[in-house]
Image (cartoon, rainbow over all chains, first blue to last red):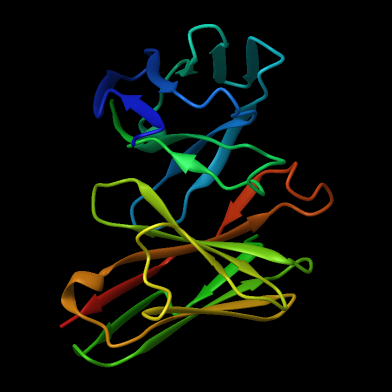
Length: 114
Length: 118
């Protein structure tokens, strides 16, 4: 059972454009939703995270939008740069009931063209 | 700098041999660490939760006798792939929570270990 579904699988954006990646989850007990960025041959690095008590969180060029009723959340990368080219993973966890175990989406390979 | 260190970063072994991967928490003592596996172009799949001083908790479908986890100290967890086969070739990544807030804090990941079994 895929608990976190991510789309698209790959994304090509022009430099300066907006990259949008979407995720949907099934488990209503999830209470923590981070996004990770991974470069080839490296471990994932935390970008930004949100809790279900807010609908949006912005950090620099990165924004998470969260829709609790629809069980969906998305990552927006504004003014996308070639250096943003990486694989992005959404994730979800039940912080207290499951010891913080993260369940990852399938990943989105982002390519930002100069 | 890195707060979770993995060693080795890559390893090649022959089929049937065992390989040990180390994961160190560099900046604080971690009672819980997580081991993930990632196949090429795929997502990260949780294998097990490593608990200091007690047995690891394995996810469904992960063979505990094949993937031995030892969390002998508060800064070191090890994953041993026993009797490795080519299908075990993968990217193994460990992680632990950021200090200070227990489970209510982000996960930091190591840089992974690329295992190739020939």
